Structures are given as C-alpha cells and as structure tokens.
Image (cartoon, rainbow, N blue to C red):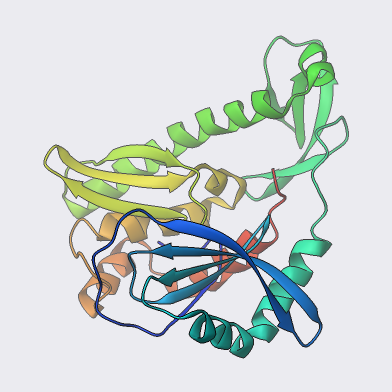
Length: 253
C-alpha cells in the first residue's frame, strides 16, 4: 500500500528484461536553480519521482532516454519544488529530554527517570536516565517496534477472523514508499506493516491493516476489493487522505 513517499508515474511501456538496478548522480537546471538528483535505472515500465529525506530520486526504465526523463521532471517542477520545500521545513528530531514525538497519534514528551525500562504514561515517555545520557534513539525505536508488533498482530488477528481467513504472518517494515504490503507465498500469506504506523492514530492503523487484509481475498484494487475494505473499515474513503497528510509531517526519526 503506497503512502510514505509520494510518487508520480508516467511513460508506461512493456516491461523489458534486465539485470540489477544501477544508480547515477545527475544535475538538472530548473527555473529556480540546479536540481541534484539520483537516477536509478531498473526493470520497470514507468518513470517515478520520489521525494526522499536525502533528496530527489528518479526511477526510470532502462529504455528511457535522459531527454525524456528530464522533460518529464520539468513538467513536474512545481511538485518537486513543493516536496523539497517541505523537506527543508521539517526540523530534525532531537533525541533529548523534553523532545516530543507522537505515539498512537498523541504527543508524548521524553523525560529522564530512575526506572530501569522505557514506558509511556500520562503524556510522557519515561526513559532511564542512563539510557538518555548515552543516546536513546535506538533504545526508544526498539521499544516502539516491540509495541508496534504486538498491536499490529492483535489488530490483524481480529480483522482476519472477521473475514474468515487464516491469520497471515506479520513482518515489520521500514520501506521507503509503503505503509504496508501483502504477499502470498507457498508457506502462507504475509503482511508487512511499517513500524512508523505506531506513531499514527489507531484508526489509521486499522485502515492500513484492513487494506492489506483485503488483499487476502482480492489480489487487486477492483470494486470487489474496496467492498472488502469497507466491510472491515467503513470509513476508508476519509482515512486515505488523512494517512497521507499525517505521514508527511511525521518527525524524521
């Protein structure tokens, strides 16, 4: 399920065989100056522009000429500039006492305590003072991932039971461009969910899980698929734009 990083696609063509993707650093003169971007050649049928934390990446088919790629980029100049502006305005996150981060859609403030373990309570994320002093980023992210896994598994079990399908295996993801995905393997279905969903309101977590569970019934995005999503999450039409909006303003952890 797309969502973390916006994409623009165009220039579709039949897929061609090829080997591993190759990247190249390039520059393009736009109306407001020189844009440095990464060009990735891959086995794909379209050109996609991605706005990442580290800059602009363009994924393109091997057959696409530089002229065609950069012509497409010029058409999307306003989109590119807006994404770069948002990236510049997003402050870096300070892993220190007093910093605030979202958990399940609610802001919690990091505080040092004498406790031996991290815990969230009353709008605070209590971190052992020794851990905070040594740099708490990895410890806090590990704590978040543990709780994300437990919550996601419970929500998935409930949704699978409602659909009458076996519960799929859960994998936590750090994908750049997707909140979630569903794969069907000989050993059974597996759903991947981005751990950062734990930063968002529970209702949006439920929406993403409903979306991926629906793929256990419909392997497409047809009307039948969205009917399955609606069975699990009747308000899905409002959830998708809200997911995109909040996803863009999450702190860069």
